[in-house]
Image (tube, protein in one colour):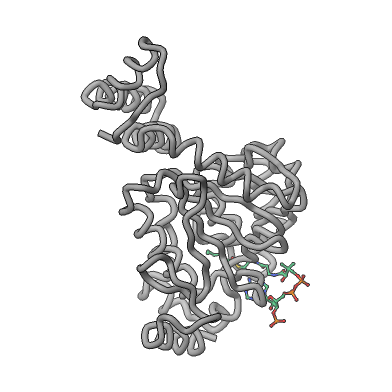
Length: 288
Ligand code: HXC
C-alpha cells in the first residue's frame, strides 16, 4: 500500500492535470486523496473533502500530507475566513490506514517520528469546522477533534477502537476526547472500543449540533460563512483565547484573554465594529 501511495504521489507530480484522477484547486496544487474547493456565496470558505471511498477515507500518509498542503493554501489565502473538512456520507474517516501501519516497527515509528505531521489541523489559525457523516473512528475521530467545531449527521458514529487492534490512540484521542466528554465516557470508549452515535456525542459535548445526513455539510458551510463575515484578525484572536482554556490555568487563561481583548483596541476592525454599531450601519471589516 505504501509503495502504491508513493507511486501515485510520483504520478501526481508528473501528471498534475490528469482528468478524473487528480483534482485541481484553482491554479494551485493537485490532489489525489482529497477534493479541495472554495464554498459559500462569497467563496470565502475553504472546503476539503476526504475522497478515498474504497478505503472509507482511511488516513494514509499521502492523504494527511495533502490535507496539510490544502490547509497551508487556505491559511495563506486572505479571502478565506473559515475551513470545512468533511468525508462521505458513509465515512468521515475510518481511522489511520491499518494496512499502511500493519508492518511498521517501533524503531520506524519512533525514529521516523510517525504521525508528527498529523497535527496541522490543530495549528491552523483560521477556524476549522468538521462536518461528520458516518464513521469517525480512531484517527478519523481524532481528526474531527482537532477541528474547532464539530457538526454531525444523524447517522454519525464516533469511536476510538484502537484497543481492538492492540494499540492506543496516537493523534490526541486520549487527550481531546477526555477534555470533550469527561473521564468516564472517554475511558469507556478507549478501553472497550465501543462507539457513540451522533446524539450521544451531542449530549456528551463532543459535537455542537446534529443535522440530517444531507444537511450537515451545508450547515457547516453556512457556519463557516457566518464566521468569515467577521474580522479575520479578531476571529483568530478569539480562537486563540478559547484554545487557551485547554492549555492554561484559569488565571493564566483569563490573563491571555484580557491581553487579547486589549489588543483588539489596536485594530481598525474593533474601531469599525463599535462605530458601525453606534452609527446603526453594517460593519465593513478590513482585517486590520
Ligand atoms: C485501512 C480500511 C480501514 C482502515 C476500512 N478500511 N477501515 N483500510 N485502514 N482504518 C477498508 C477495508 O479494509 C475495506 O477494504 C474497505 O475499507 C471497506 O471496509 P469494510 O470493513 O469492508 O466496511 P464495513 O463492513 O462497512 O465496516 C466499516 C468499519 C470497518 C466498521 C468502519 O471498516 C472498520 O472497523 N474499520 C477499521 C476501523 C478502525 O479500527 N479504525 C482505527 C484505525 S487505527 P478492502 O479492500 O479490504 O475490502 C487508528 C490509529 C490512530 O486510527 C493513531 C493515530 C492516528
